[in-house]
Image (cartoon, rainbow, N blue to C red; front, side, top):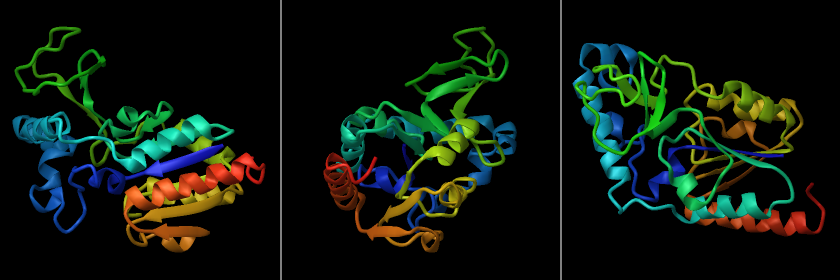
Length: 238
């Protein structure tokens, strides 16, 4: 099995702002105000406005999957074994690029959740405190289906199971600052997996990886996929 962790770096080349870079979103807005449960309780409209702006950008038409997304979709189709993308990203670029086996551990911008009836629904419009839940009709109960700071990531049991049984673990476009994702490489290595970092520059966890290649995701990811598929075709990797 091939387990692939992706972070903001893979989507940056599609035009989406990262959160932690010097020019990232956290330089423009306080994360405590818009992406924490406490911030949402204090001022839900401010949090909604922040997520509405992200959603409009994602759906603007200018944001499209790039060569790295397409390469991972190709890998899923052609690799002679199971592949799983574990993404920290809340965009849908992996799916639009053709990947089907994707776990969004931090949730999805194009889904909302009702805090009253717990329904999770696709959503592409702006969201406000006055928006009634399409399922139960409650107003003021809707929030983005996103994992905010202080909340537990989604799919952790599935992710941990994948890390225990994968033969190759690849980290793409991540800072190595965000836990629990920052410890996935160590978990995979303990299970005997070969570990690879593909990043613009060495992450904070770079020393943990056995192999690495640095450069733009649109360059290093397609090249790595091409090489892996060539090797797998002659039976070196299984």
